[in-house]
Each structure stands twice: as C-alpha cells, then as structure tokens.
Length: 346
Image 1: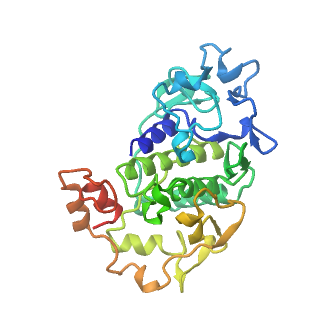
Image 2 (image 1 turned 30 degrees about the vertical axis):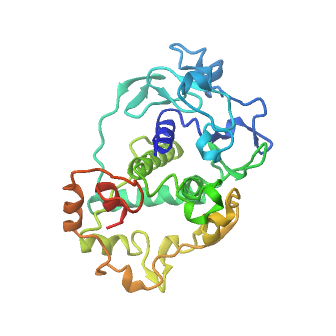
C-alpha cells in the first residue's frame, strides 16, 4: 500500500504523523494546529531556527509533504499528519519533531550533526555477553515500567478535537502497532469481509513498516537511557538452542500453561481484546490506558517449546530468500513471493 510506505517515510524523516507531548495542551493537540517546539537550548527558537547553523524551520505541511492528498472522508490513518498544519522541517542532518536530534546515521559533536556514526553490528541474542543481555533487558523493562515518558502521546478517542493520553514508551509502541493493524474505519458496503485496511500487515509494506517501527523504538530507548550505542539484538529462531535460551527465565521467560514466568510475568497488555481489532468496532479506538490481561504465549506449551515443529527452519529461510519476486497481486495474505512467505502465509 502506498499509504503505508508514505507513513513509513514520515516516521523515518520527521515522525510528523505522531503527536509530540510538547504539542499537547490539556489532553488535546494544540488548537492552533501548530507543532513547532523549540529544542531545549536557550533562545533556540521554533525548530532550532535561531541556532547556528539553523536546525530547521516551522513550515506548512505542504512544504514538507508536497504530494500529500487529504481524504477528509476516509480512515483517519490515511490523513496523517491529521492534527497539525505546521510542523518542523529539519535542515541537513537534523531530525525529530523539534529538530533536536541527528538523523539516522549521524551523531552530534559540539551541538552539530556532521559526524557519521560508526556502523554498529547488530548482535544475535546468542552472542550477547551476560552484561549485554542484562543491559538490554533492563532497558526494555524501563521502557515498559517508567510512566514518565512524554515525548509522544497516544490517541484515546478520535473526537474533534481528539483526546490523547500519556503511556509508557513500550505501551506507546504496542499501541502504534495496534493502531496500524486495526480494521478500516470505512468499509465498502459495510461488509466486514472488506476489512483489508490493516496498514501494517498483509500487504507489501509489512517488512518496511515493522523495520521502521523497530528503528524508531530503538532510537527512543537510546534517548531514554542517554546512550546512542544501544541496539536491539536479533533472534535466530532456526536454531533450537537459541529458542531454548530466549524462552528461558534468563531472557523473556518460560511459560506454564501459556503464562509467562520470570521478570515479565506481571506485564499487562493493552488493546488486546479481539473485539478491538474487528470491523464491528470500526471507528472506535481501544482505550490504551485500560489493561487487557497478562502477557501470554501459547495456550499449549508444546506448541511453543524449542522442539516444536511449528518453528521455521533454515530451509524455510533459504526458500524465502530464493524467491524471485518480493510480492505479487493481490498484495494480501493470498500473495506469493518473499513478503507473503516471510510474513507466514506459506
């Protein structure tokens, strides 16, 4: 879906489609529809425009996204950035809702984003040292349990103006995943089978959307712990020994009758009621401040243990990467090609 790729670019370049906490007043986006905060630097000006070099400018949306077409009658997700008419347009290698950060691939030295970052090699979970694993898990726990995160807000009610709420960093990203994946607000002929507008899955943008979501999550954790060397590890689940370690209490916890054990045992989910995801609730958002039960794994533990036949194998990976086409019509769960195979429709 072209919309999905456009929003992916928005997230990557400006995160313009989201709602920064600095652009919220009394639980609602600024009524003047301007979101041009000043960086936390004396006399920086809106978007850092008074700094030398100038980091950005407060610009109309048309200058940032000249090809954006607003469909006033459509699903609100098709109209991002929906709640602001003016946003920060960052110059050069600056990035963020206030142009206070460096773009991906650059690091700040002396207040200037000119130095390229040294590429970091993303490690496998199997290769992390004990200290690296603890650092990673502590950061993930902090992102969930620290309620003081205010950089971005979630939408609780799509009223006019909308009602927005503060969530933990982890819960915000869980909500973003839900918001992209919920069924379409407007269904052709009011037919529940026409739900197809899942903007994060079952379409060509599945891999790019999730990759950018993870990059953004990683960036927000770096800001939270003030360490831009932090990186998310990858998990090679084709190897049984890697499954066993990650599904142990040293990592994400074992499970008993589907109940997670270990440090994440008390974690509560949000927006996980099945009704919140289906078209009979079109136009009604879940309330992300209400929890929807403990984390669960498989209801039958044998289906998720390290020896289950349900896990993809190295052969499955080899088949996927050997496919000549990335995707094919009808660009949904019924498509053949690398994307459909990687998403699990095989």
